Amino acid sequence: MRQIIAGVLLVVMTSAASAVELGDPDRGLAYARDYCTECHAVERGDYESPFFGTPPFSEIANVPAMSELALISFFQTPHPTMPNFIIPSDTIRDLIAYIRSLRN
Ligand code: HEC
View 1 (tube, rainbow, N blue to C red):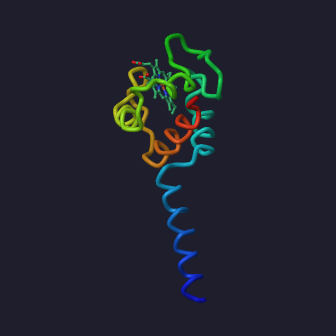
View 2: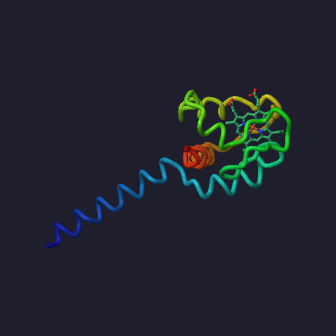
View 3: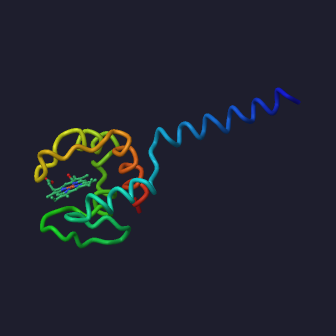
């Protein structure tokens, strides 16, 4: 019986750990609302970015070439318009989780 409980706990704990690894879409959205809305439309289904020429997140999410890896490497280089903007790596995972959740 003990072993079964331990086994169940282990499964629960490892799935919780991998969820952290993938980032939390809710935290990503909260961060995006604070830091990205100046230029990007960040809400689901909102295609009108306030800043001309800036892709809305709902659009970025559905560009096939915008894989997770492409997004990671994009976030590791400075934004063209924001050379000093550095996003913490945990937050990058949250943002990517959020953007992925917008996929149609
Ligand atoms: C000062 C305005 C501004 C802010 C603030 C801003 N961006 Fe951007 N972002 C842009 C512009 C302009 C582009 C398009 C540049 C390009 O494609 O070369 C862009 C492009 C992107 C792209 C790449 C899209 C593509 O198709 O290549 C991603 C992803 C992105 N931004 C995410 C974010 C996130 C996440 C935040 C907030 C943490 C953010 N941006 C904040 C202006 C901004």
